[in-house]
Image 1: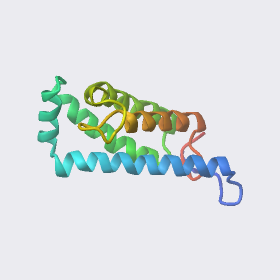
Image 2: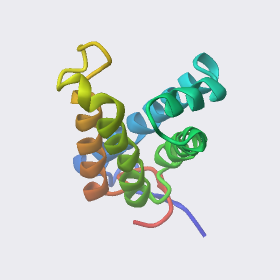
Image 3: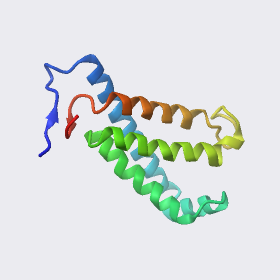
Image 4: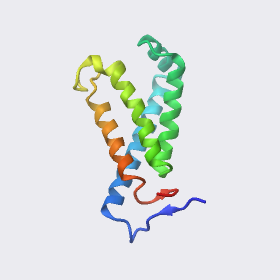
Length: 138
């Protein structure tokens, strides 16, 4: 049985910080999945993956992981595991396509600055855990 952890009177600053990190990261993953679904389309995303040498099916896996992982983070379900799993996607995006564009994300093709920062953020979240107001056990 799952329950919400930490009441509003007992939540520490660290628990609230972890919650803020968890929920905003979850929302960002939903936004990225939405971009792939509604702007680039799943087929277009698959085509892009193929154009950079990745299997097209991986695009669908990434979209599903971003959607499900984003929802899990927002809810606080298996936060540590989900954060580490989603960091793999970001490391993959550093390797291909962002690394060749250099460090700064403002570079043409988007550098690897932002995905690296986001991966580190997820590792910090994995260390912190669920935080306050999360489903499941700590």
